[in-house]
Length: 392
Image (cartoon, rainbow, N blue to C red):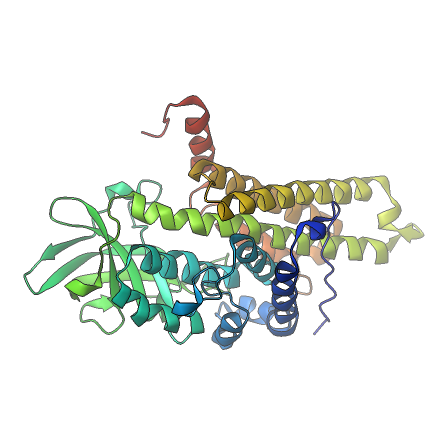
């Protein structure tokens, strides 16, 4: 196993803008990734397995609900800290970041923001510690970019709710203990429900044969007349705005996380270019390779500054959905381009598991699609600046 020699690029001295707490959070996450993720992740990706042994470590570095108040088991950190943690984890692997992102923004956040005090006390501490893992059920087989068309539904049966339907492409589904599921009531209004593993009629078949996010567990959620207690309904918010509020938080984390993947590809390519000799000199001394590397660090730097400013706006409660969409779209697109250029710098070695680049590239092909596709985020920006929605 090759040692993890990663050195984070910081061309515009972003560290100078971070607080001491931010740096401590970053250093703890970075050290954990080097110690616990880098040595094992290639093997798990090759086998298409999720490394369940890292769940406790994710909890220890505060990756589960870092911005959730301490009274509910969270770390009580700010939004920049959350972003930094996602960046460091995705530097290790996008699939591992997906696990943390789902747990934090798509499971813990809606329970905290929309749930009752009883629900918060029952679920959040166990989710923060990793004792309990969760997933988020919004996407359906026939409704991805148009979640309002969902057909999953529940009926009021007096002493319980009867849930029917199916969700697809659900991260963490195969091993999740709870699912925050979005379904329509009899009037067609969207509500969130907490569904627990073991409820009769609830199953989570795993999705196989993925070429992307191979070290992440993906599956379906099947609801066949599932009896859900009424106290498991999230009462704080309903309508499509409720799940979309969760997606805002997740997309914000992705905007930071994708930078981590790009940083790892860039650092790998730079190190390789300095060591690889062709025509009697390192390839880093050639104009074409310098062009690739210079463009990579330029785009990474721009993405870093975009994410940091978005973090400031999130901390102030001023970040808009459209701003988050722009950052998610830009930074994931940037990371994909950096990964592809980095692969070329490594030549044939770039496709092997000896280096992380091809794994990052395949992972990012999912990241550019989930939590809102590349094209939908473009149209969100378009609608925001023109006042006209092109996708309706």
